[in-house]
Amino acid sequence: MEVYSIQNDFLSIKVKSSGAEIISIQNQANQELIWQADPEVWNRHAPVLFPIVGRLNGDHYYYNDQKFQMSQHGFARDKDFEIESQTDSKLILSLEDDQESYSVYPFHFKLQVIYQLVKDTLQVSYIVKNKDSEQTMYFAVGAHPGFAVPFVKGLSYEDFKVSLTPKAARSRISLKDANIDLSQEKRVDNQDFNLTHEEFVDDAIIYSLSEPTVITISSDKTDHKINLDTGNAKFVGIWSQYPTQGDFVCIEPWWGIADKIDTDHQLTTKYGINTLDPEDKFEAYYSISFK
Image (tube, rainbow, N blue to C red; front, side, top):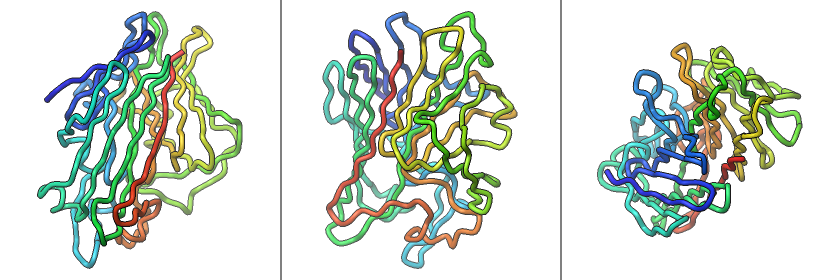
C-alpha cells in the first residue's frame, strides 16, 4: 500500500492507495481533522463507495437474470487504486474493472478519484466511465468522510452542532434494518441538531437533496468549523457509530442510496441508481472547507 501526500499553505492531505481513501487532513496548526480509524469503534477514515451506496436488501441483486452478491457500500473501498498523476496540490487515482470485480459486478468501468487543494478547501471529484461500447452501465457512487470531533483541544463532542444551509424543508428518508423505508419519508423544516451520540440511535440521518447544500460542523466555543458542500449529490447521510461510541461524525454526499425494504432486487430498477450510456462518463463532485 502506498500513501500519497498533497499540501498547500492551508492544509496537508494524506491518501492511501487502498480504496483511494483520505487518511489524514491537517490544518496549519497541525490539528487532525479526520477520524483515525479506531478498530474498536469504526476502522475506516473516509471510504469511497462504489458501485453501490449503502446495503442491498439481502446483500444481492439481479442483472440479466443472474444473481450477484455484494456487501455494503461495494468493493472499491477495499481495492488498490493506481496513481495517474500527482502535483503538490492535486492527486488523481483510478480503479478499473478486473476479473474479480466482474464476477460480482458485470460491467467494464473506470473510476477516477480526484483530490485538489484550493486555499482552505479540498475539492473532490469522482469520474465514472463506462468502457463498454454496447452495454448501459448501472451504478452508484458516494463519499463517507469521517471528521474528528472535537477538532479543537479543550472542547467535547457535545460542544458541537450540525447545521444545513440554505434553510429549507427537506425530505428525510428512514432506515429499517439498513434499508430505506420510503413509506416513512417525511418533510423536515429544520435539520439542525446538537451533536450527541444518541442522535444516531436509528442509524444514519438521510436527506434527499434538490440543490447544493452546505453542512457545517461548528461550536459556539470556537471560530473553527468544517463546511462540506454536497455539490451535485442526490442524497446526504449524517452518521456516527452507535451504541459503540467514537468522537467522529461522517457527512456523506451520495449519488445513490441503499435498497428499499420492498425492492425487486433488479439492478436496472434500483431506487436512486444512475445509468451511463456506452463509452459515456459521469462526474460527481463535492468539497470540504476548513475555517
